[in-house]
Length: 116
Image (cartoon, rainbow, N blue to C red):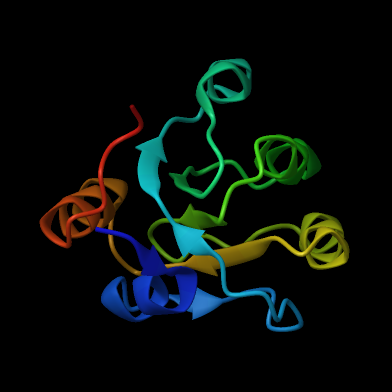
């Protein structure tokens, strides 16, 4: 089952850190990983990517793979330079009070498939 990034935001009790991004992309799959080279090799279009990384390269990887959004667990805040780049590139960045484990569990329960 697919859902919009805004619906995922509600499901995860998340805050949108890039409110200027108007496009509400379809989330087609979920993924969690903090090793950027691994995500570069396995990222997919429409992916909701859960990571604790907050630097500029996160945005670059998400944009390169044409992901739907980046999700930061445990109320992690992304660096301002990274948020500016995400906004410029049209990438939604969410932060949730939930742990990465809880985020993935909720996405799976809602029918968002793993990559593959």
